[in-house]
Image 1 (cartoon, rainbow, N blue to C red):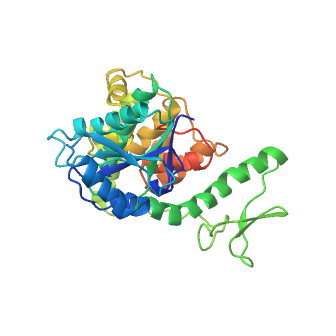
Image 2: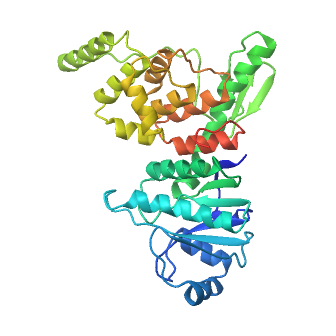
Image 3: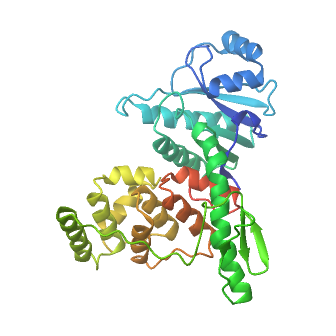
Length: 361
């Protein structure tokens, strides 16, 4: 696979080269820069930079030995600081990827790992930084062969691995495993929580251990609790919302998405950036009411628009799609949507870790 995204420590990557987010002056910064220097051999790498490289302008890149790293080379991309997006930051960030890849090609490097350049201490917005990285890497791979890995590792990613991953595994177990059991044996076996053995679900004669209980208690026979609004003002508001939805009942996917974006007070730019969808692709969708997106793009747009699960199902249905309880990709998207975690990068990492086709790569 020539391009993939993983959650890891860039200094631990076993590729021929890794990329570092460097300062313009021969000094060591925080975050990725400090981690790379520390792992490679702080004094040795710093002396090499001071003696043989010196000052390098933003957007440029240079190569050094990997010293104590597994990687043979370090390519240092002099990363731009993000101000407001109006000071040439995108041009400089794109240059970091282009110059780094050009250096790798010149040195006949066959595999390389990138961090999300500038999105840490340099302040570049994560989704926009990812979009630029994907653009430049894919453009390079159109005419070149190289194994490229984009490494995502930050506090948020670490928390995701420690806290969300076990819940996701339980969610997959509760949906996917049960659905597959029904397909195999035909007869639906109700799941019930084993009070005598917390952390297990009883499924017929089988018991499946969960990473952690989905909730403290589950009873499938609990009556549905309906909250009825007594306040006239709130009732009027709900009726107005209902009437607006009814007025859009025959909308196409494109029309209904644009309506939802407007009703939530978002902008199109907010949505396609969060979805990591190319703006040209979104422009086609916006300008053609009968535009039919691929399912994976439609799911990303649901995340980009921060739709809840019911809204997601409704929007997908307008393109002829449904969320399947027997499809791992659908389950992972459903989990993140249910938990209001609208981050396509994190979803993509989970798809990679579960051996599924990725969104971005």
